Image (tube, rainbow, N blue to C red):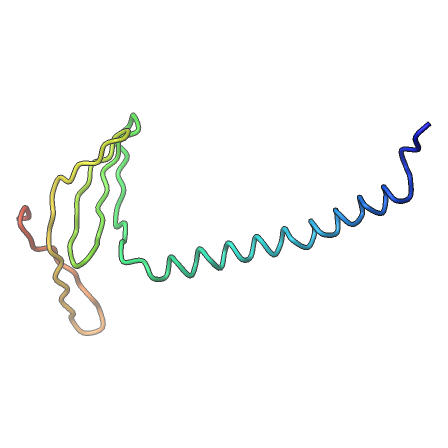
Length: 104
């Protein structure tokens, strides 16, 4: 009859557990570092998100000195409006105003 608690099997199981206990935290921290490194260089910024219900949303996205109003629904994306962004500074506070093609 085969012994279920054979010493070689127990040692093999302990080795697997120790290796996984070392690899899982390393993988966790590497993926967090990788995500932060790539997010820091992003030029696309989501300024606002408005849920409309039924898996539909409006997004205000800023990219390349422009703001876009996007409608997302299911598998469809529609650009509703595009505006240029001008930034004015007054003293210590930065005030931004939107100027563009479809704006007021």
